[in-house]
Length: 505
Image (cartoon, rainbow, N blue to C red; front, side, top):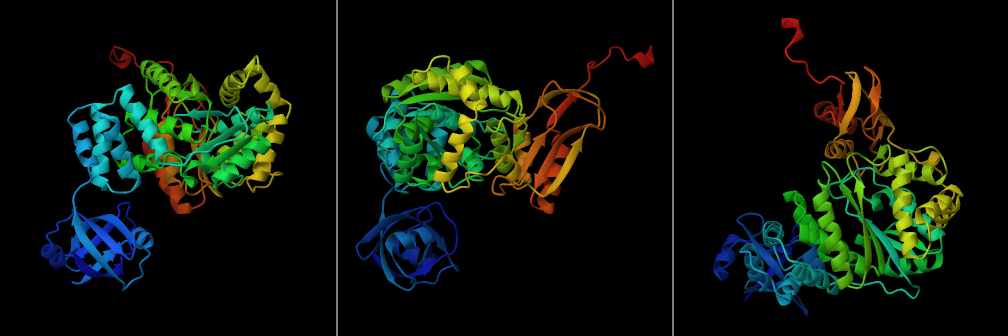
């Protein structure tokens, strides 16, 4: 055991991290990535050790902000440290890396240690790599779902049944939640929707709806609003639903991987925690999406339905076209604008209306409403869905009188023109997302893209293909340079090649 003086270290760290002077670390027999128990008064936490010859003086201990807050310690106070071993969960991670099936106990240990921040970034990455390379059977995935639910909060409603929908993502412009929730709620069903912010996309549903209303709601607020008006659109990260999921996603992001078992567990643990009883899943299929072929889409659908049944959710899945963005807009504010235009009855792309009413119709039919898609269209066209959206916006502390015309998008813009004649052969989803992010999205809500051409459209030389919007000139230039390099809209002529070269005949 060693007593040291606390010093605040102003760095952002996901780990529970302390920094020791190299001499102190040697005296107590510690090396980088070892663990210590840190005590202050009645508070104790287990942390990862890093060492430095100059960042902290001998006799001091560097504490990152989250450790100082947890220990309730002030700079200059005395803390004690004691070496401790690696948690049991590390051995279970090794078992998965070796291809072994994990027990319910082993999976619970891993998830508990993730939530309690007992694993280092390296160990968490090893867990993600293990399930990515070795996979999990459905028994393991069920254990994983239950462990993720048990280590967080749940929402218990007085009103039933509880309906929900979810898209596993991968397609830009997927603002359908802003239509589905008010359509379903206006039919008298309850659909409390907890949504994500963007991690690698151009904007998550929470980012989009945040341009209209607040999304950081407590569990009590979600419950009250949903039971009163029939629907909410809230950020799931503001509440403690399956908290291990967000931590695992952060480990996946640098590796650019989405392990199949974790996708299933992520969705279903969040939905069960949020109180869902009936669920409609959207599985977009297409190039540059999470699901690139129909066979994988069908496998997802089978497993979602089977695993949902095991945890008490009745689920239906729709495999949808994911070969290009939905609608014409990509980016938080510009997508909110297009969604409101649809609710207001203004002209919007048919793909947005078709997908939204089809999925909303599936939810309605789960609620006992016949001809769900047709009923969804009626609720949209009659303005009832718009009125319900206004109620939701008002209850989430937004302006219920906001219209699509009121939504501002980036003040700096650049129209991108075609340098060739032909037809749009493809739109690369990943490249569209990269351009919006280069323009500042999703952190800058007003960054985005408006498409003037979609797949199959005829394009003339010097005809406009799309427009990039940004709040900042420097970010706009970055996005323009990237767009010119990537060329996300591929234009092909009707004749691709001639053989032999006519000029040589």
